[in-house]
Amino acid sequence: MAAASVDAISASPVPADGVPMFVEGSTRTCPLYRSDDLRAGDVISGPAIIADANGTTLVDPGWQACRSARGDVVLERVLPRPARYAIGTQVDPVMLEIFNNLFMSIAEQMGYRLQNTAYSVNIKERLDFSCAIFDANGDLVANAPHIPVHLGSMSASIRAVMQANEGQLRPGDVYVLNNPYAGGTHLPDVTVVTPVFDAAGRDILFYVGSRGHHADIGGLTPGSMPAHSSHIDEEGVLITNFRLVDGGGCVRPSCARCWPVALTRPVILTRIWPTCGRRLPPTRRGVKNC
Image (cartoon, rainbow, N blue to C red):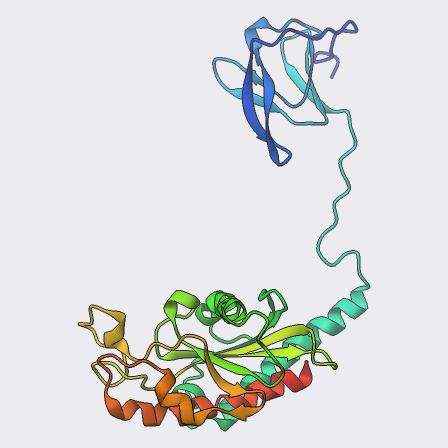
């Protein structure tokens, strides 16, 4: 340390230029110093940039750079580091763990209910489904360990329902969609979304959602995944923001009229309704437990 000590007499050198630099969340003009112009004892306060022929030294805010007698640039923190807290460290760890397991348990119970009540091999045996809880903004709160590709985009489906029905959602409503342009994956993956209200029925606290692979959703070929399709209409029924349950009552009579069908085998409409109806038990389980 003695060989690298800074001279007792320090000075503030004149910057060679000012350059824009993004620091601490904003862009500001910071001084640029040439390393060859610095003398022993020069002190540079951050934010600043020191450039030489072989590299660039960034002096962050709260730090100082000093030129030592042997020509080194010594960096030293002169302001204390701002206090930072990791997520969850400012709450009671016991309560945090309780609620963590509570939310996870709700999503897992939704999955068990969906698996036990389904008659589709895709859901009952292949386990091609996912269940999760979302907050009032549509952000993921907890999900069971199901299919990651489902959960990665399901928040977008929740927000699509929120935006399309702003101010119109009420307790007991259930919405269905599979639109890839609204957070869906491929058309056979049908998402069921339900808002969870407070005891007074005024404010939405959570959303519960489940996404499952239906065996057939229409299209040119059975299974709804034609290899030679050139348009999404050829893959099956495209469902966007369809109200499956209105205030607790099913809307089956309007089902066929609300789903526009293009290039879809007519028999498919008689199959979609009962399969979507089987998706209600896990949704009700999630609403009850929330």
